[in-house]
Image (cartoon, rainbow, N blue to C red; front, side):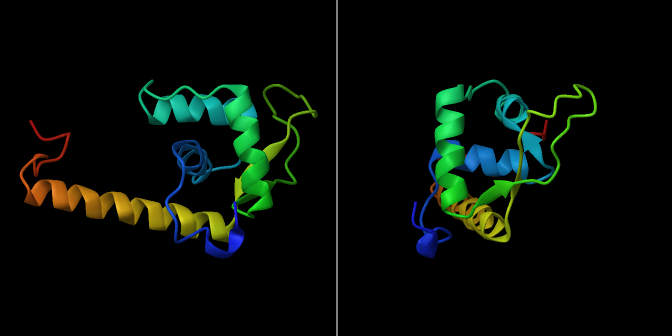
Amino acid sequence: MDKKNTTNKPLTPAVFHILLALSTQERHGYEIMKQVESDSQGKVKMGPGTLYGSIGRMIEAELICESDKKIDPKMDDERRIYYKITALGKKALTAELERYREVLMVAQQKQIFPNTSVYDV
């Protein structure tokens, strides 16, 4: 991943879901996997290979970084590494969400996607 143009190009699904999971709080790897599954209502299940491969590339691209927080108070396991989203990661996530919004607007204009919220009854 080239950090020079990261916010302008579409994100892979794995990167998108990891950034989304980290958008509200710092998390360690297992928490990220569980949050991705929860956010996608079980539709996306990320294995360790995909997760840690993506994390490595995302750190290199400066989308996320390791946090200073090292201990999960519930688990008291200092081996866990926590990750947090960076300012560049927030910009990339915002740009991706804007792309999604634009695609949904086109779909609604073409009447191939309802113009209602999933919560409307």
